[in-house]
Image (cartoon, rainbow, N blue to C red; front, side, top):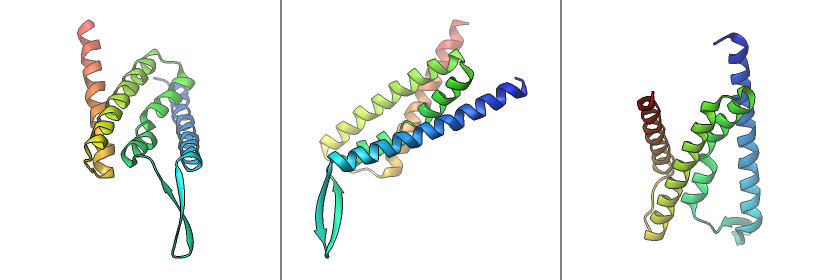
Length: 137
């Protein structure tokens, strides 16, 4: 890999990070606009979100790898990135369904377990996808 393609890849990842920050700001503003309830506590106005914390945290944190790879793809147009994005989005949706089930069962989990569990699932699915592609060769 030459220096020029490495620089393009790094700039693409930086672009993906910027896209992710726009996504996070969009989600936060959307949630406070539609899903926040204002209450007064101790004379101060406080906004409280009325949506599932587990699901919201996963929407914020779970798409970081997909945005980084999307930025890399935008800069380098490597076809391997398309496959990675598909696998990441599939694992994102699977973990989202698990989180919805956890929420419906009334189980409380920590933020760290929420994010780490989703990322471990992503790594497992990516690893499985790589093994399948290696067997085809």
